[in-house]
Length: 233
Image (cartoon, rainbow, N blue to C red; front, side):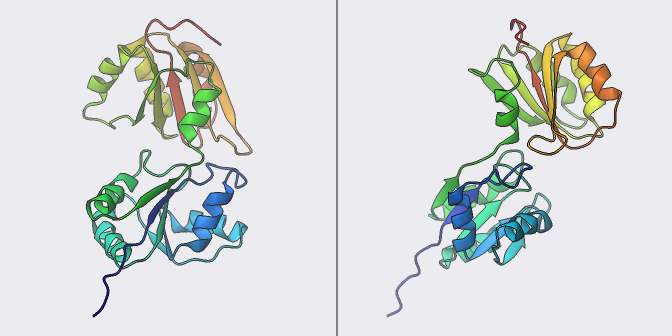
Protein backbone atom coordinates (compact mmCIF):
# COMPACT_ATOMS: atom_id res chain seq x y z
CA UNK A 1 0.00 0.00 0.00
CA UNK A 2 1.37 3.37 -1.02
CA UNK A 3 1.92 5.71 1.89
CA UNK A 4 0.52 9.24 1.50
CA UNK A 5 3.13 11.87 0.67
CA UNK A 6 3.94 14.30 3.46
CA UNK A 7 3.52 17.90 2.32
CA UNK A 8 6.58 19.99 1.64
CA UNK A 9 7.31 23.30 3.31
CA UNK A 10 6.73 26.81 2.02
CA UNK A 11 9.50 29.16 3.14
CA UNK A 12 8.87 32.91 2.98
CA UNK A 13 12.41 34.20 2.48
CA UNK A 14 13.47 37.83 2.92
CA UNK A 15 16.18 38.96 0.50
CA UNK A 16 18.30 42.14 0.31
CA UNK A 17 16.64 45.43 -0.62
CA UNK A 18 19.81 46.53 -2.40
CA UNK A 19 23.14 45.47 -0.95
CA UNK A 20 23.57 41.76 -1.68
CA UNK A 21 25.49 41.29 1.57
CA UNK A 22 22.33 41.98 3.57
CA UNK A 23 21.17 38.37 3.59
CA UNK A 24 21.21 35.90 6.45
CA UNK A 25 23.11 32.62 6.55
CA UNK A 26 19.80 30.88 7.15
CA UNK A 27 18.24 32.42 4.03
CA UNK A 28 21.16 31.19 1.92
CA UNK A 29 20.89 27.68 3.40
CA UNK A 30 17.17 27.55 2.63
CA UNK A 31 17.58 28.86 -0.92
CA UNK A 32 20.26 26.24 -1.56
CA UNK A 33 18.18 23.39 -0.09
CA UNK A 34 14.66 23.85 -1.52
CA UNK A 35 13.37 22.10 -4.62
CA UNK A 36 12.05 25.30 -6.24
CA UNK A 37 12.25 29.07 -5.82
CA UNK A 38 9.13 31.09 -6.65
CA UNK A 39 10.34 34.61 -7.49
CA UNK A 40 8.56 37.85 -8.21
CA UNK A 41 11.21 38.60 -10.87
CA UNK A 42 13.38 35.61 -11.77
CA UNK A 43 15.98 37.86 -13.43
CA UNK A 44 16.58 39.84 -10.25
CA UNK A 45 16.62 36.72 -8.10
CA UNK A 46 19.10 35.11 -10.50
CA UNK A 47 21.56 37.93 -9.76
CA UNK A 48 21.35 37.11 -6.05
CA UNK A 49 21.64 33.36 -6.57
CA UNK A 50 24.60 33.70 -8.95
CA UNK A 51 26.36 35.97 -6.45
CA UNK A 52 26.24 33.17 -3.86
CA UNK A 53 26.76 30.27 -6.25
CA UNK A 54 23.25 28.84 -5.85
CA UNK A 55 21.59 27.04 -8.75
CA UNK A 56 17.94 26.12 -8.36
CA UNK A 57 14.88 25.83 -10.62
CA UNK A 58 12.78 29.00 -10.52
CA UNK A 59 9.20 29.89 -11.29
CA UNK A 60 7.80 33.40 -11.65
CA UNK A 61 5.14 34.42 -9.14
CA UNK A 62 3.82 37.99 -9.25
CA UNK A 63 0.59 39.95 -9.06
CA UNK A 64 -0.50 39.25 -12.66
CA UNK A 65 -0.11 35.47 -12.54
CA UNK A 66 -0.82 34.66 -8.89
CA UNK A 67 -4.25 33.17 -9.66
CA UNK A 68 -2.72 30.68 -12.08
CA UNK A 69 0.49 30.04 -10.12
CA UNK A 70 -1.00 29.56 -6.64
CA UNK A 71 -2.76 26.22 -7.40
CA UNK A 72 0.40 25.02 -9.16
CA UNK A 73 2.58 25.84 -6.14
CA UNK A 74 0.08 24.23 -3.76
CA UNK A 75 0.11 21.02 -5.84
CA UNK A 76 3.89 20.87 -5.73
CA UNK A 77 3.92 21.49 -1.99
CA UNK A 78 1.21 18.87 -1.43
CA UNK A 79 3.38 16.37 -3.33
CA UNK A 80 6.26 16.91 -0.94
CA UNK A 81 8.26 19.61 -2.73
CA UNK A 82 9.81 22.40 -0.67
CA UNK A 83 9.50 25.91 -2.09
CA UNK A 84 11.12 29.23 -1.20
CA UNK A 85 9.06 32.30 -2.05
CA UNK A 86 11.00 35.53 -2.60
CA UNK A 87 10.04 39.03 -3.74
CA UNK A 88 12.06 41.46 -5.86
CA UNK A 89 13.62 42.74 -2.66
CA UNK A 90 12.92 42.65 1.04
CA UNK A 91 10.30 40.62 2.88
CA UNK A 92 7.62 38.83 0.81
CA UNK A 93 4.04 39.64 1.72
CA UNK A 94 4.69 43.36 2.18
CA UNK A 95 2.88 45.06 -0.72
CA UNK A 96 3.22 42.00 -2.96
CA UNK A 97 1.08 38.88 -3.67
CA UNK A 98 2.86 36.43 -1.30
CA UNK A 99 -0.16 36.58 1.03
CA UNK A 100 -2.28 34.70 -1.53
CA UNK A 101 -0.10 31.60 -1.64
CA UNK A 102 0.46 31.69 2.14
CA UNK A 103 -3.30 31.51 2.74
CA UNK A 104 -3.69 28.72 0.16
CA UNK A 105 -0.86 26.72 1.73
CA UNK A 106 -2.34 27.07 5.23
CA UNK A 107 -5.75 25.98 3.96
CA UNK A 108 -4.15 22.78 2.65
CA UNK A 109 -2.28 22.04 5.86
CA UNK A 110 1.11 22.90 4.39
CA UNK A 111 3.76 24.21 6.82
CA UNK A 112 4.72 27.86 6.24
CA UNK A 113 7.97 29.09 7.76
CA UNK A 114 9.27 32.69 7.76
CA UNK A 115 12.95 33.36 7.08
CA UNK A 116 13.23 36.94 8.37
CA UNK A 117 15.45 39.65 6.98
CA UNK A 118 15.43 43.10 5.34
CA UNK A 119 12.36 45.29 4.93
CA UNK A 120 12.51 48.70 3.25
CA UNK A 121 9.91 50.40 5.44
CA UNK A 122 11.43 49.17 8.70
CA UNK A 123 14.90 50.24 7.57
CA UNK A 124 13.57 53.70 6.71
CA UNK A 125 11.60 54.01 9.96
CA UNK A 126 14.54 53.36 12.28
CA UNK A 127 16.60 56.18 10.75
CA UNK A 128 13.76 58.61 10.09
CA UNK A 129 13.92 60.50 13.37
CA UNK A 130 10.15 60.07 13.71
CA UNK A 131 8.48 58.08 16.51
CA UNK A 132 9.06 54.33 16.11
CA UNK A 133 7.06 53.05 19.08
CA UNK A 134 3.76 53.29 17.21
CA UNK A 135 3.25 53.48 13.46
CA UNK A 136 0.90 52.47 10.64
CA UNK A 137 2.11 51.02 7.34
CA UNK A 138 -0.25 51.56 4.40
CA UNK A 139 1.88 50.43 1.46
CA UNK A 140 0.95 52.13 -1.82
CA UNK A 141 -1.95 54.57 -1.86
CA UNK A 142 -4.79 53.92 -4.32
CA UNK A 143 -3.74 55.35 -7.67
CA UNK A 144 -7.02 57.15 -8.37
CA UNK A 145 -10.29 55.94 -6.83
CA UNK A 146 -10.23 56.13 -3.06
CA UNK A 147 -7.00 58.13 -2.78
CA UNK A 148 -8.63 61.29 -1.39
CA UNK A 149 -10.64 59.25 1.13
CA UNK A 150 -7.55 57.38 2.27
CA UNK A 151 -5.53 60.57 2.72
CA UNK A 152 -8.34 62.20 4.69
CA UNK A 153 -8.41 59.22 7.06
CA UNK A 154 -4.63 59.10 7.47
CA UNK A 155 -4.58 62.82 8.30
CA UNK A 156 -6.14 61.99 11.67
CA UNK A 157 -3.55 59.33 12.55
CA UNK A 158 -1.48 60.11 15.64
CA UNK A 159 0.98 57.35 14.75
CA UNK A 160 3.83 57.71 12.26
CA UNK A 161 2.37 57.02 8.80
CA UNK A 162 4.47 54.99 6.36
CA UNK A 163 3.77 54.76 2.62
CA UNK A 164 5.48 53.45 -0.51
CA UNK A 165 5.49 55.44 -3.74
CA UNK A 166 6.88 55.05 -7.26
CA UNK A 167 9.31 57.57 -8.80
CA UNK A 168 6.85 58.84 -11.40
CA UNK A 169 4.20 59.68 -8.77
CA UNK A 170 6.32 60.81 -5.84
CA UNK A 171 6.21 64.58 -6.44
CA UNK A 172 2.46 64.60 -7.09
CA UNK A 173 1.80 62.45 -4.04
CA UNK A 174 3.89 64.68 -1.77
CA UNK A 175 1.95 67.69 -3.02
CA UNK A 176 -1.36 65.99 -2.26
CA UNK A 177 -0.18 65.04 1.23
CA UNK A 178 0.94 68.63 1.88
CA UNK A 179 -2.48 69.88 0.81
CA UNK A 180 -4.37 67.44 3.04
CA UNK A 181 -2.06 67.09 6.07
CA UNK A 182 -0.51 70.52 6.17
CA UNK A 183 3.20 71.11 6.70
CA UNK A 184 4.02 67.99 8.73
CA UNK A 185 7.50 66.74 9.57
CA UNK A 186 8.49 63.97 7.14
CA UNK A 187 11.34 61.72 6.10
CA UNK A 188 11.69 60.43 2.55
CA UNK A 189 14.00 57.49 1.81
CA UNK A 190 15.08 56.01 -1.49
CA UNK A 191 17.66 53.52 -2.75
CA UNK A 192 18.29 52.27 0.80
CA UNK A 193 21.50 50.17 1.14
CA UNK A 194 22.46 51.04 -2.44
CA UNK A 195 25.17 53.31 -3.84
CA UNK A 196 22.89 56.34 -4.12
CA UNK A 197 21.07 55.89 -0.81
CA UNK A 198 19.32 59.09 0.21
CA UNK A 199 17.26 60.29 3.17
CA UNK A 200 15.57 63.69 3.11
CA UNK A 201 14.12 64.98 6.38
CA UNK A 202 12.30 68.17 7.28
CA UNK A 203 9.02 70.04 6.90
CA UNK A 204 6.96 68.64 4.03
CA UNK A 205 6.94 71.99 2.21
CA UNK A 206 10.73 72.03 1.89
CA UNK A 207 11.00 68.30 1.15
CA UNK A 208 8.55 68.63 -1.77
CA UNK A 209 10.80 71.29 -3.31
CA UNK A 210 13.96 69.27 -2.77
CA UNK A 211 12.56 66.04 -4.21
CA UNK A 212 11.06 67.90 -7.17
CA UNK A 213 14.33 69.67 -8.00
CA UNK A 214 16.19 66.53 -9.11
CA UNK A 215 15.55 63.34 -11.09
CA UNK A 216 13.33 60.83 -9.26
CA UNK A 217 14.66 57.28 -9.36
CA UNK A 218 13.94 54.15 -7.37
CA UNK A 219 10.99 53.43 -5.13
CA UNK A 220 10.42 55.77 -2.21
CA UNK A 221 9.46 55.23 1.41
CA UNK A 222 7.44 58.15 2.83
CA UNK A 223 7.27 58.63 6.59
CA UNK A 224 4.93 61.29 7.94
CA UNK A 225 4.71 62.50 11.52
CA UNK A 226 1.41 61.66 13.15
CA UNK A 227 -1.05 64.40 14.08
CA UNK A 228 0.20 66.28 17.13
CA UNK A 229 3.69 64.73 17.04
CA UNK A 230 6.53 66.96 18.18
CA UNK A 231 9.22 67.81 15.66
CA UNK A 232 12.12 65.40 16.21
CA UNK A 233 14.62 66.10 13.41
